[in-house]
Image (cartoon, rainbow, N blue to C red; front, side, top):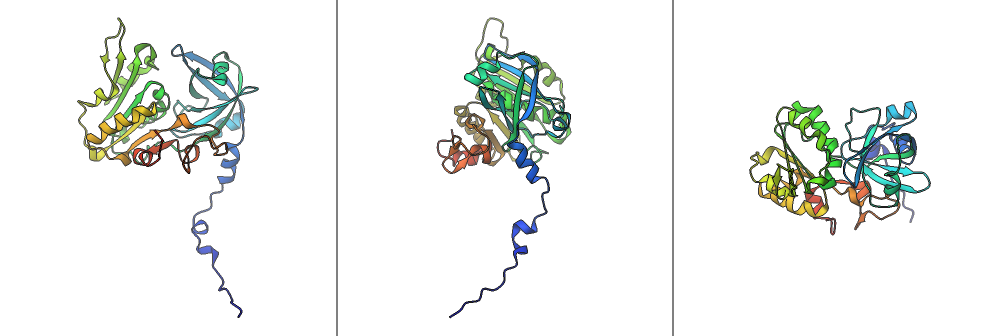
Amino acid sequence: MKHVLEPYDITRESEMLAPLDYNRRSRLKDTDRIYPAEIINVIRLTEMEKLFQVRIIDDTDRERFTFLPGQFVMLEVPGYGEVPISISSSLSHKGFIELCIRRVGLVTNVLHKTKRGSKVGIRGPFGTHFPMDKMRGNNILLIAGGLGLAPLRAPIFHVIENRSYYKDVYILYGAKETNLLLFNYQYEEWERIADINLRVIAEEGDANWTGEIGLITDLLDDIQVDPGSTSAIVCGPPVMFKFVCSRLTEMGIPMHRMFVSLERRMHCGMGKCCRCNIGSTYTCLDGPVFDYWSVLNLKEAI
């Protein structure tokens, strides 16, 4: 017996009903493309970290390059390899991007020896981003530990440049020692912005330290916010997420409004090397930004 299949209207598929994205092909090509770039400035932050200002050489490519807070790029040193680095600058800086790099391996050691004018390559940007638009109208807690201030810097700039969209804003930053604090030359600038509350704490202080001593969670003890209209971004070592996010949960802030970055798991940025996967989740494709509820459901994510 012969069965005749009824004709199927493919135009009913969701992919066909969605508006055409004419830029998708070019975006996919761009992520696998290396932009020739040069280092235009190097700023020493600590003994282990430097801030690199990197400029894409081609005028057209430089103008069309854009990113969102929380995304990262692959930075290539020709002949040595490439490393994933979170973008640590304002979206309004069109002439260059800033990358805070810790000296921890072969490529980063070579980078720390480079000078102004050195040529590098950039791929990206990659990954998900912090949902700054969805946070509009909320109180914002921007919390960082150690090197976590580097990826947090982009959302800080975004909030400052769009201050009227948000309610009370707190920047809470902690480090193990005072000589490990990053971007201390900007603290006064951030404090001068209306209604932005900056608090910095160190676990160990030196003779010149007049700030607070303790853990980053100590800074949450006297913060009073409406948990129903508060969002939080937490960046730092993964072990910090458990303590900070547990404290935020005690304050009544829902886990789906806490956002963390797993940028330390990044490798190739395109899901090809399989070194960033947690189970079936590729953090370079599905992340690095996740809400905390999703992170708790990813075994061994933190």
